[in-house]
Length: 362
Ligand SMILES: [Fe+2]
Image (cartoon, rainbow, N blue to C red):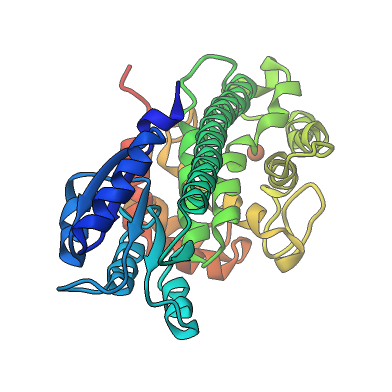
């Protein structure tokens, strides 16, 4: 493409002779030239058209060229138009004002025709170069944006697959495909709600949401004869059952993922009790990681709400009361009192989670 053909110049001069002479000269050089005779004329012209360059006289009726230039430069739509001042007034003050207003160059009248043409050609080259840079930056920005989007989508898909894998593995471990695994989903929701109410940061709340469901993952190594037994477990069987905490921890502990590391801590500590009577290590109070104390509490609540071979499902109030008051098997001292207080405070949310993620009727 011949750039000279599309380069547009506007001449702003109140003297007809000047306008017509420069128009003739620049048209001959291949430029598309328009003319206006005063400052307001320039501002009117640029509403409909955008010249590449304006040859601007300074002393003009209505508004002087310096003020016109200032206005053009303050408007994003016209800021990139190059202004070349051509003026009979060429004192130092005027020239400085012209440059301060955003003018790119200044030629004193009377001017040398060849010099004027050369300066116009040079400014036009600069303009095209700036446009090229601008367009390249824009293209680059779009490419980066596109790549970022693709990366984000890929990351989201990967994360989804990762979370689903963990979920499926946990379901397989605990329910051996017999049930839907709603229990483990509820545990994630309860745990996040409790963590939020405790004032934990967002990272902790999201991590516990995904890792709490892994608490019983160690059951994958417990034989069906024990895991699915409906009668009371013998002491030996119960000892074997207790191993699911350590097995789960061993499965997850070496992961680089913080989510799986939290899952390991929860697997190991979700049967510890605040008063030190739990297993596998008989830890007490804050020796038990917070995530373990949270999951222990809500795991008991959820077990109370669920049907077991040896008990009916309890309603929300009954289950909550058993935890808050304690019973012979699980005294109140088994729980972290701060977490109990939180569970009591957000009990409506806890009840809602159970209702919304109930096992489907069979
Ligand atoms: Fe467990």
